[in-house]
View 1 (cartoon, rainbow, N blue to C red):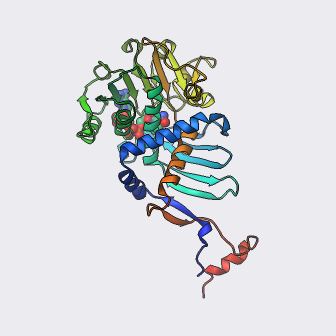
View 2 (cartoon, rainbow, N blue to C red):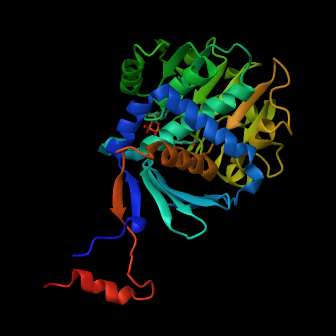
View 3 (cartoon, rainbow, N blue to C red):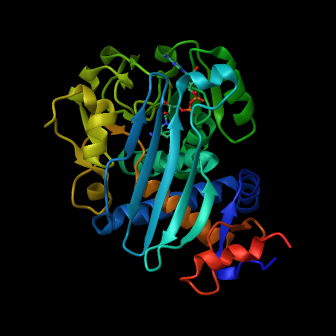
Length: 349
Ligand code: NAD
């Protein structure tokens, strides 16, 4: 049997490769590297082809495709969100993604993106908090202690210098898991028994719960002046975490308005509710935090450009390593127009 030619082999990064890559690079340098790739792509925001992600909803969850292109490369992520999955031993969020060369349309990378989503979401949160959180922020409340929570906490330490994290989850087993995983990682960890207790003394409040409903993880009267809220879990129609009163008192920062207005905390507000686009803060075209009393809110839903940046980062890091497998994904007939003739390679002798 003829082997596929090298130019038709697509590097595939499996979950095992991704885990080994994290250890080889180191978690902190990797979070910082991802944050820097994401920030670079936010700086050239206008170059990208942008569309809200394409979502297929069911009663129990959502499956989404997230495409974008900068004109040279094209990327997409397949991702699901199924809050009830954990009860069946499955994850709420799993993902994989692909990067392709616009010039030929040929894929140049296929990668697991479940770990990579947790890493890029954490890197994005911390990059945004570096722009918006109050100066000298040292303590974060981490509400929702599931799959994303350790990544969120460690990125805030690596990129924003957070020294203490106050954990709360409605399931104490999740808090215990998170506290155990974060032990010895240079963070002072406090386990809390309510969201109210978790936010005491915190300058950054991260909500990262999974429940397919309009929840009130943070009530209006819980939020005082001067904090930065990093709202991660409200990312789907009918799935929110904050009381609308918080949004009316906060300055709301978003990734891509047409997507966030439908999926984020913003879905609770009128269609013309004022927002600031993060790329404009990063490029200096719009103000970020303007006063110590201001409540800044990152209404995070996760946007395709962050995944594109993460895939670019992985493509650059695996070059010259053994941390991928060449995948026979593309047909490579000897004569490009003789696809049929290629079948003969596998004909029984
Ligand atoms: P997960 O299911 O592993 O963890 C969610 C945790 O929230 C669970 O431990 C659960 O017990 C807890 N929880 C549920 N309701 C709660 C409540 N009322 N109070 C306190 N805790 C509560 O999910 P995950 O993978 O960590 O993801 C968390 C959320 O973040 C999901 O909603 C997911 O869709 C979202 N997410 C957003 C982005 C983004 O870019 N914005 C990226 C990834 C995941």
